[in-house]
Amino acid sequence: MRTLHLTVLLLSIVMAKTTFAVKPAFLIVSKAICDDNLKSTVSSQLITFQTQVAIEIGKAFPCAKVKTQYENFRTLDNLRQRELLGEDIQDQLLDFAKQLNTDFLIGLQIKVVGQTAMIRAVCLNNKKAKTMAMAMKSIPFDSFPMSIYEEITKKLIDGLKQYEICPFTGPVNVMVNSTRDTTITEEYPVYCNGMDQQYKKVTRTSNYSESTWNLVRKGIPWTDGTMKFFISQEEKIVEENGCYKCPSGREGGRTYNEKKSLKVTGSGISHESIHDGKTQQDTRIELEFLDNGTYLIKPMGTSLPAISDQHFEFSAQGTCDNLPPKNETIKKETTVPLNPVFGPYPGKSTDKVLQQKDEKKIKNPVTLEEETISIDFSLKQKEN
Image (cartoon, rainbow, N blue to C red; front, side, top):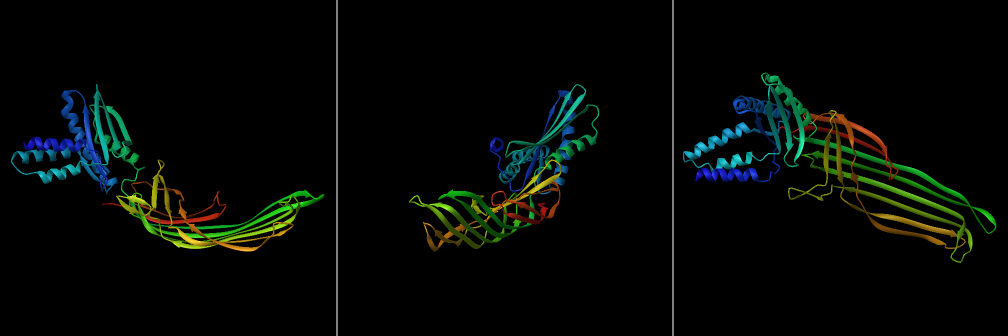
């Protein structure tokens, strides 16, 4: 009865949907495809192969838990023996079940056809059902040098260097300064009342903004921190129309003046996202590792909204539709986004430290503002 209970419980664990573990976990399994008379030899080689891969995965990704199929078989056999002796193994069984919950599955295979052995290793992301890396090689079956396992393992880990398995954590500071000081003139001839006149519109814009983001990356890609910002905007429009058309149909000269201004100071990071059922600051820092041994860093976030007064001034003088000087004030909500992309910089997901200090200047195609964006970060690979 105890043996039946053990079998049913383990079967339910295998059939259950895998969930993402607190620590990234690798499970290494293997399969031999060969004639029965070669099974013992090939299975022995696979145990050696599993051990080699487990050691190197542990070195490359020190934060991860690594288990092999061979280790699990030994543990399971030991539990069965203890159960047959009458021992209550419920707690040990639950611990073992937890260890079967894995994020990354590495499959090893040795297939023997004739005198050729085809050796293959593949790593899958269990959560996304995606192949992450693969390595393979064919050799004569009568020659199994240890170096062949080292070579295939190295290729497999090289493929995994594009993925952040052990999270990089640490401070990331970003500063953004934007300015716009432009004058746009629109001018062309107009005709009315038997005379040539001129239409001219001058728009002067003077904007300045700065934001400082002091962030701390705590996981993949979850980030904490603070930010503050200041924005000053002013726009003046002077429109002179020598042939302004009145409601009556009469045309004549008219000058229109408009001024808009805004100053706002704000701080704090938005808390719109949900992570693990809890409100999460809507800020993250993504690392994208490229296949050429470089990476991009992408800080993203949004400030808390700040409410300020936006001021408007209007006046017009001319042949009609005169407007005496008028002032209006409305409340305006302002938020500041963060979404620069920095890099590529030299670095892989197996490095222990990613560190850079950089600055770039760009022109925002939407606001036409000249932006200076600087970043200073020092991220360390989490080891436990």
